[in-house]
Length: 321
Image (tube, rainbow, N blue to C red; front, side, top):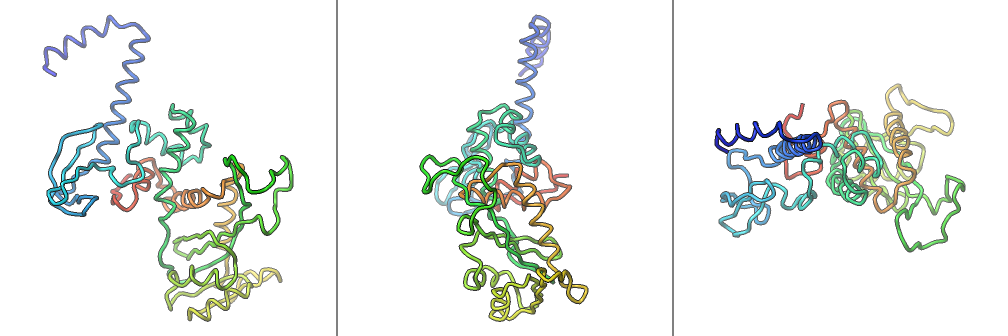
């Protein structure tokens, strides 16, 4: 816009009504927030950006769409932008994504997050699971030093399903279900805070061994409770293993080996989950990843960190402080 046109527009602001001024301010705020998100997404790292279709590096600019720079690959001739092949592709209202990141940090319900961001309830639900798609698979791949393992259980839930495979429970019934209704989750955590958790079919040695084997290198020391399955798995993997018989009141072995770290994490996880009044089993992994993300960032978590976590491995998170 030319300078004369801009000053003419400023002179006309005095003619606006109060409601029009509010609407103009809201529209300007929306544009600023959208521009901030686009700036975060559309990063050109000295030509290091690669084509998400063929991973080729011979790319060039190909116009702008929805505020984002598009590119075209000289090798496969496909076009793309910064969101292509990410969980956030084709989502709208970019100006509200950082606000939704704040809702994730606070652990708001779907309806409260919708009210916070000014979107529909169904949009809030869709955004939640798009934002959590990448965190659900971002977990520690290798434990170091002393690793603690223990299982925790969540009640099986068909929340949101129209057709149940069992008779509906009565409201106000017993909170703890039968063993067949409980979903085991194996949590593995080392003393450095690296965490991995897995939905399990069971807690026998044959169920646990395929999960622990890639996590535990030969120099890792494994600490568990007194379940015999862990002893069998440790012997097969070939790692040092210390069992803590909590049933008999033993909490620490040789002043160093215990499972208090993983038990404290389980306790925080359960207390945090309570706010959702039951999580559908089909989405349980997303909620586990949500909690891992909060724990991983700790006090430094912010909406930008949530946005980069949602984008997954495609983006290398910069310093967001």
